[in-house]
Image 1 (cartoon, helix red, strand yellow):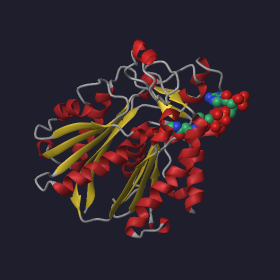
Image 2: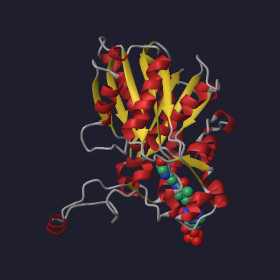
Image 3: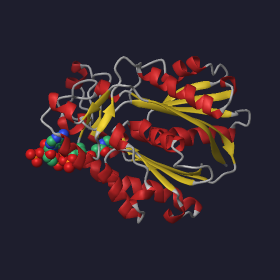
Image 4: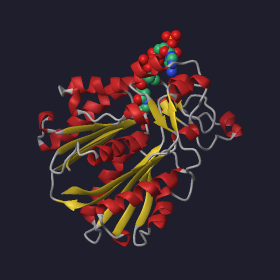
Length: 328
Ligand code: UT7
């Protein structure tokens, strides 16, 4: 069983931060950022909470899908930057969009979040015949936990949201999800701190570097190495399950972290770069939002068309990775 993407919507904050703007915080320059990452500018949430951005994107997706919000059976929000430890972003968004008959929960697979959430949506649709539609919402305000003194990480990320309404269908579909938790300490941000007395008395195996609470830590080199393997692997694992080759895919929609990572993945897959959707130049890395935002923008621009075969491939903190092959 596959899924049909009925409608998508996105929201990005108005505030734009250019590469030059970062010279106010750290020693950097536009040329370094552009040539090492491919990023030119990104959006930054000012007053907008994560749930607000998610709600805006969700409303647009419901409108594009031309459905009644009451017919949504489940809301899954994927985020690594929820406004609250509890309640979930999904419950807040569910209420805001009027999805009064839906269950709601959040899912955190970091930048791979949308791939995980879409695949979870499909599994719910497959096992619950009473469920008509699932709303998947990716929403992130990464700027709220960036360390603006760390030039190697703060320049990479941006904020925004994107959402999709999906229903079951018999279209082509395959997925593969993975995680290598041995790399958990390479990309992380602490929420609750360990109580100092516990840290002293208990000798537990904490793989995480010392980092300020709520600030993102990244070992860029290790994540880079992981990512250049994880992207092609995510595609290959999903493709092998249904005997699809890379040549049969119309569009690859990869996680938008660094254009050099995508170029390396393209080479490994033997796929020309013009088959890869790239939006990181104007949005930066928006974590779980990056794949649906790229997808939504390409659909709205008429680049991705109904009936085409897509490969959504992601990687991120965890270290997680995952791929979905589907017909749009
Ligand atoms: O969603 C997943 C998120 N993460 C990723 O995908 C990140 C993966 N990693 C990367 O994209 C890259 O490793 C970075 C963009 C983070 C760094 O690029 P790099 O080419 O691996 O640079 P590097 O870490 O090897 O650093 C080279 C130099 C260093 O200076 P020295 O030690 O050679 O003097 C850095 O301090 O570049 C310096 N540098 C900068 N210079 C100007 C690092 N960041 C900057 C900067 N501006 N913003």
